[in-house]
Amino acid sequence: MTGESDVSQNDEAWAMEMLGRINRGAQEARERRDALAAAVDEMAKGFTQLGLKPWTVEQTSPAREDMMAPDVLLGGRAEPVAKILRYEAAVNILSAADQLRGFAVLLRAEASLMGAVSVARGIFEACLWATAVIDPTITTDVRLQRALTRWLARLSAGIRLRNMLGDGVTDADQVIDNDGQVEDEHGSNRDPATDIADIESYAKGRGWRVTKRPRATEITPLSIDWLSENLERRIGIEGYAWTSGSSMAHGEHAADTASWVELSQDLGTAPAWLIQLWSTGAWAGPRLFLTTLAGYTGISSLRTEYQRFEKLFLNQEGKS
Image (cartoon, rainbow, N blue to C red; front, side):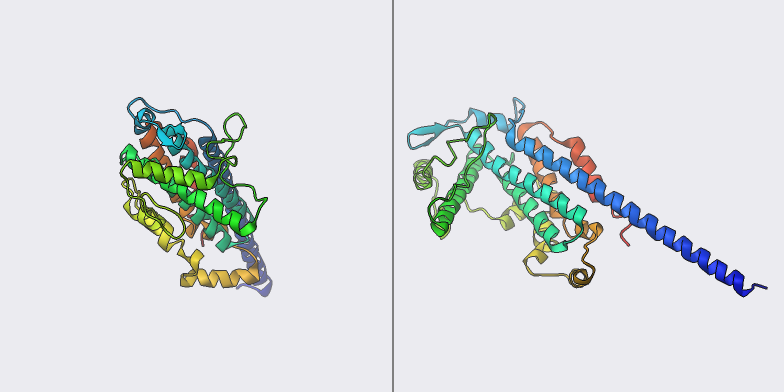
């Protein structure tokens, strides 16, 4: 017959065992979180290099075809097609790298679900824009039309910003080249209105349709929604990463996520596994871009880094 002291000891032992399990589970969750954040940082470093350093290309790749294309004549200067495509891709690659670093910070902090989801959406968007201008499944001319359309959008955005904020605003359309010097062909020492006129004139000279839109001139219609559904090299999750899982960043909160957002106001935490669940863009974007880059250049990039990142990102153990 079991006495009260035995029951008390059994209850205490059970409680201590459960407490140990909880502590071990919490430690394992922190280790998984930190490992994922480190992998995201590694991806950000890799994307930074891809944005700043020249790409190695195979002789028979679409990238080599772009290098052989006739120069683009803009006003009194000529720019190689490959350089324009590379630049427009790099703008978004570096944007993705910066947002990946921010995503890693938010993972470690576990303080903001919506902040992390919004950044993940931004990662996907930047990767999708970069993918669009180097898509190897289309022709050089179509890639160029996309790149010039994106360039027009950036130039127009710079003009709107300058008009709103007044004189003295530094032009955001500025990139540092490999020698640490400002890239003047696309940089702050050029007049954006003149560049817009030059691009429009070139496009019309090629017989391309040029459409005036409220925010910027378009040579080819481009949008995230269209690209996420129509890219030939899609991997099957683009629509979800942009419109469903990430749509709560635009106010469409799923019921379970709304509950977590409400609960997080009291707890002050957003567990990393929940951030992963609703941040598919942080995984799908880099995967789509790296797959496209490999097809464009004929060379795989960041294979090891991405495999490590994907393995950790898709690991859902310890969720409950």
